[in-house]
Image (tube, rainbow, N blue to C red; front, side, top):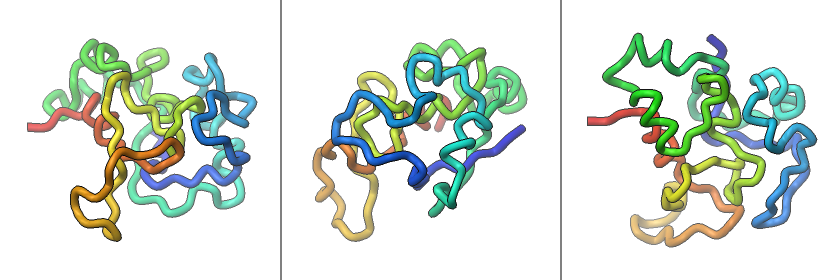
Length: 152
């Protein structure tokens, strides 16, 4: 099992993008990006200390059904995850499961279709002062996390 850093993941190796851009500067981003394994993504996005300020890690290039089989109470059934719009190429969690080069959000977070975007929590702002995030803003990945992870 391979682990890759997520959370506050600065993709400094990529050129800046225009707010609301529909394409990514990465030549590998596009319709086929969902099938890429982590090594292909990290060939560019792991260079030069670009993966800094890491808060936590998540396994990638792993078979979702196999992991769920070991932890059925923690993870939703595969059919439910895909119904919620999460991309699992060949049934695996890959970089493109959580990141999409067409995403308008910071770090290219791939919120599930229809999921509301909310500003990422910030200790500098009081509760309720976050408002609707603008394109390019850091957003909470919670809707994405809850598409796979069951909570009681």
